[in-house]
Amino acid sequence: MAGTIVVTGATGTVGSEVVQLLHAARHPVRAAATDPEAARARLGAGVATVEFAFDRPETHGDALHGARALFLMRPPQMADAKAFLPTIEAARAAGVEQIAFLSLQGVERNAVVPHHRIEKLVRESGIAWTFLRPSFFMQNLSGVHRDEICRQNRVFVPAGRGRTAFVDARDVAAVAAKILTESGHERQAYELTGSEALGYAEVAGILSEVLGRAIRYDRASALGFWLATRRAGQPAGFATVMTALYTVARLGLAAHLTDTTRELLGREPIAFRQFARDHADVWQPAPASTRFEVDDASPPATVGPTPRAAR
Image (cartoon, rainbow, N blue to C red):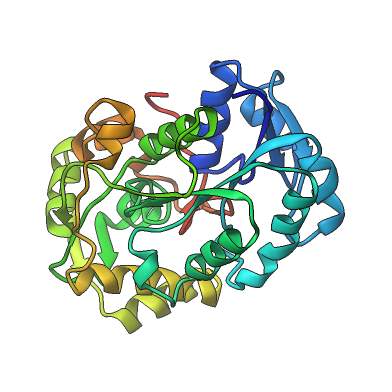
């Protein structure tokens, strides 16, 4: 399928992988980022970059000019689905033929998260759509929770004894690159998971084995987690979405596995143990002065630079 593919969230965990996969396969790709120069430095000088911000409609026209497809994702700080309307309308005006939206597993049954409303807006746009509904990213452990694993040797989440069907963001990006470059995926919603559902005690156990030191699982209460997340400097909306996602796991609603990732990619999904091995250097104890910033291009969020091991 010919035509330029515009990737929003191009410096985030999934977006950067999508850009690199498309670029490596010689598909025309345009990385849309708030800081094009920084994006170019990260993605490589050969990748076309353009200034784009969801809350700055004046950037939308140039970013989407001549585009055939749009990879759309929600930055974690944007909790109001209506904020995506200008981008969707600009895509329609530019003649974009397909929107691939990075959504969430179970979003069709969860009206609390903004992705539910964003899917509705995309459907109503009249543009052909494909929804990617991944389960919880393994990369949240190397991002959002990296600090506590590094410094406190613990995973602190309100998931109780619930199990989670983790998925590696690299697999999600591979699916995105596939559906953006071949026909037959229009009006499809793909629920993407790995091949195993793990409890967080098991997650901590695997991390302990891989890292060679004891990592414990501290079961937080929903309120305790929300307050701790706010004290860490995260926005209230981010803390609320994260708490809601972990509550879904605690209630036993996040363990559903599908074969969709394997069927689309023609291989087994990346296992959590392999992910842990690939990213082991990320969890080495960091100096107390290290500061991790929110990566605003990964749902629900990741923190700090995207690990590049095994890429």
